Image (cartoon, rainbow, N blue to C red; front, side, top):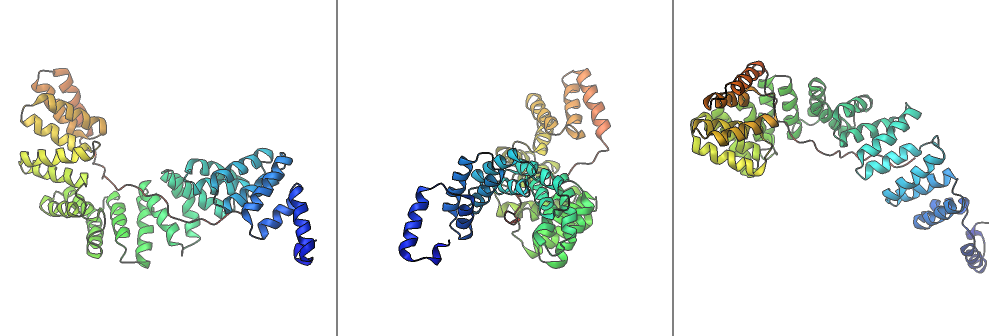
Length: 379
């Protein structure tokens, strides 16, 4: 009997009687359908306490808790349901979504792999799995899962952007180039897309085209973060130091704490035999970021020129620790060992420098962002 079908007096009596009785699944579902979610959650909890082997009740509790945005509790309910019945439809998918919304990307991926294995054609599970790998910064797997769903949904700009960035940071530069060009076809004034396409082109060693994209970015949005730095870096990479300097300086006008811009300005100063300016800029960069290899490679070379072998050795060893595959620090350290009479150490470092000499320097790249796609709600 529905309460709305009886008189007011009888309704009060029925409500009072129900309050004294244990809630049933039917009552819990009715409360949920009426939008009375806190009461529905309470009712489903009573059902699970009375029937702790009822996987469906735990799953229903998880859905209601997710609607209430109580994702940790929802995830716990979904896990309880899966322990009781691993094949219960949609529960693994809902668990993955609850973990995703908490930013627990590895846990989300684990659940979503199970959901996709159970239903390989489930596009939502595949999309969420790709985005979970993206959030976990596993860009190779992210691009693998996002590519087919993005191709099937050409109008989904957020999805294509996530795929483009995944391809870029997985060093799948051709894929990244295609995606960013597609984004720019729809929005030619997108400075971030120009920047990221420039990075992809740089990864393909198409430096002039990369420069053109960064130049477009700074024309469209002169204050776009990292646009001036990226353009300066490409000029620096092309040994166009006089063009690079004003770009690094422009980046610093918008972001005075941009450690990479300071470091590369210091490098240009050192190349121009301005040792004092170089030391000032490099040490300023070091205070902000102690993981910039170029800072220590240049400091080591400068200290070598001053015959300050102790500080030079420390700086060069730090540069090698940050990236052992670059030849310059090995070469300078070999020269240092030779200067102090360490013949064996000198031969080893100079031999390593010769072996690495033909390897190209990897561009610095930009930091990946967290995913911004809003997936749909539980099944």
